[in-house]
Length: 150
Image (cartoon, rainbow, N blue to C red; front, side, top):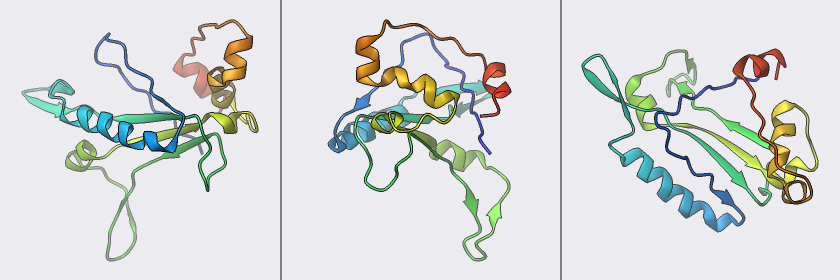
């Protein structure tokens, strides 16, 4: 089953896309993520309390990973009882504020597999595709994505 996460961008400032070409770019990503966690502007008001905005990281890799050979990898947090190993079905604000979900997109793997709408749309990031064809803006509504079943 595929779950889509819809994110509300808090400001109208541009949000950078950092595309990695080398595995050494990990430190740059870690530093950027640390700055986002420590940024006091990444909060929202709920009643009389300030809460941390959730962070969803999306990594575009210009290289293939060693062991995973699919174009889009979704990394989700799950809670487990350490003693029993059972998954806990609830969420806690404390934990949610200090951890995050991620997507990792392997651009070279998109050439091999385009199995759903997302992988087809992400093909615009492939260098040969973006250099040979004109660039178009594609607007997809959440209802369009939900209707595809993917």
